[in-house]
Length: 125
Image (cartoon, rainbow, N blue to C red):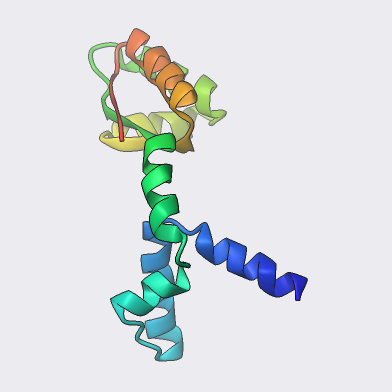
């Protein structure tokens, strides 16, 4: 029974993107075509309330552009995200791109400030 509770908890905590990916997997690999309402039910009745609350407490830091000081931005991304130099450079070159997802508001604002000080154009979503 504990495994089912853990599974149910995982379903309730899925993001909208993850629910869409799950629906695609169910359709393509198992031939099950979930209706939009069924997907919402699978995500749990509390998901609607949790999603509204999560939107306010969970932020994605999006790098819109590197600006004039691209090297400084690459260094800031490398240090802030724990990436290697190549991965950080690829992320900056691929702007607009998500630097980090699902951060608390204070963490997201701190990362945004760090990247903006390096010369990047950043937005929180």
